[in-house]
Length: 171
Image 1 (cartoon, rainbow, N blue to C red):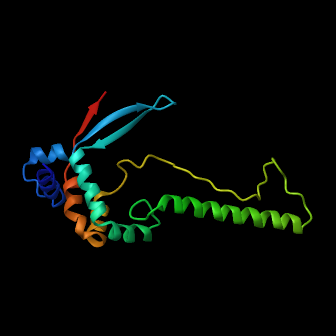
Image 2 (image 1 turned 90 degrees about the vertical axis):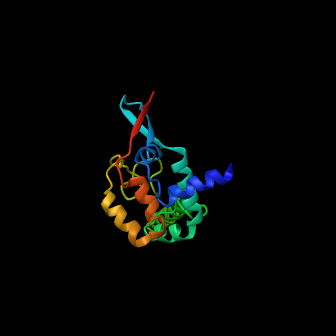
Image 3 (image 1 turned 30 degrees about the vertical axis):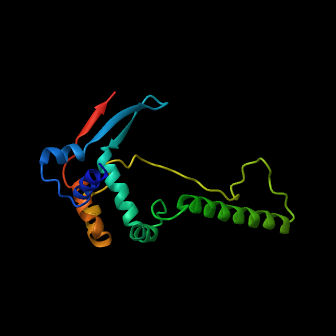
């Protein structure tokens, strides 16, 4: 029933799962190995459904607080309607303005801007991802940030990350 699910989610969100074995199961994740085009393996971890649902409830209930905290750090993925689209359009507008200024400068100098030729002075953007961040974050630092900035979610954070979690490999 819906009351049972609500009760279970409340226990998870409050970090009140007393049974260590049940906590391990709820905090576990299925690990699937996907083969990348270069032949290397990309691990994909999918958390247990009740824990993920509890996380969605927490995000929904505390949307405004989470958005306020994350937007200060330039993160727009939670609590900002169309946040990622906003960031994408802001970058595109900036690049359009740079290109217009570049073209205006070329016209003012009575120089034809090179078309189809690489110009080291032409505006552009570079997106890079230097390494896989999985497992690189400090849980102690993250815990400290939750304690200061999102204390209402601290018990849930401790439930999810306060103990070692199991990864169950599927194939």
